Image (cartoon, rainbow, N blue to C red; front, top):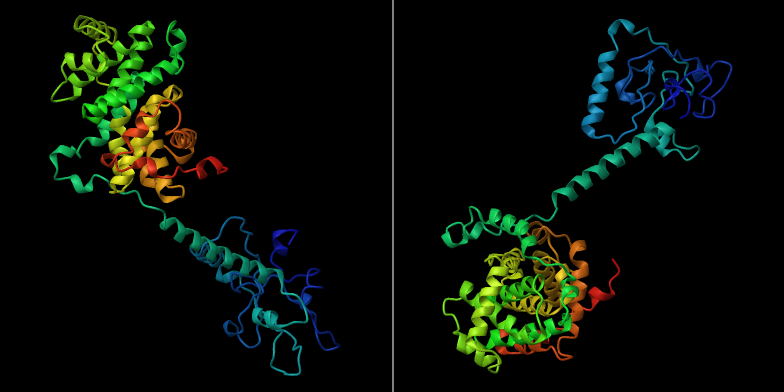
Length: 430
């Protein structure tokens, strides 16, 4: 097919016929090379002539073959190309056709080249223009299949459609609320290495304190929001205020008192918190620490915690089972104790916990387009956090910090610890 456009697709002309089409020779026959190349009026593809479209004695070829097309051809594009070629050929340019000498014993037969004859013959190869035409048709079929695959993409579900008549669901602006939470969550985060500024405490002591507070929270039967806000207040306070080791537990109970005042309807009294601390502190010490803490935090208690995002992302998971919810909260509470998980924002912790819980229950990777849309996190973005969560799940019943494990070993929390960890997430190669 190399050469000028005139020789493209095997247009019959002097010097380019030999070796492409078998031509009978004899004293009374002319070679196909004698056909006038200026004759036009044939079909859009040169020399691929249908016998029914011609008279008995006329074999017509196109003067100028179509320009090669080097982009994917659709049926619509092929039709437009044929119409354009027909419009370019004016009637006055058509010359008188040249009659062909018969090449067979039948006197009325013309030397007309038929595509079907070449397909059925086993004596010589199929012409290049026939192969090119078949390749174009196959490409069109493949494009049709790709279009059908695009149509069958996984749809994004409207998770708020069923709550349009529920005024408490605030469907009209719930998306705006979570967009604001996503931007504001940075203000509630702390530096993942803030413990380096403390002179008398370390991350291990922080873990012991939070593990103890999880048990206190469970015994007082407080709301889930209270626990997450308590941990947030502790980290934000310790990030800017040096604390002695003997005052660390006082910081913990005071943070829980503040969180209860913010979230609970019925707030535990100060004496209850002193009693749960084995009377290690007086009432005055608790109230003085409360004043110091709220002033240090500038009374900013309205921060997005992982719990805020957990509720929204669980709704996006389209799973109504209580098992998934309890397992997700079990996994994310394990992260509250771990100092290393401070490097992840609350929204990512929530998304990774739900992803890990889905994988744990199903035994395979589960993250739908709906999950990705409402969490704004792809599966690749939460893999690192999810793998750490699987390790925490595996080791939750070992060591000294087992408060979360004991809490979720009860019937109230669905025995969530009995689920086997998603170990395949650790072994999978992404």
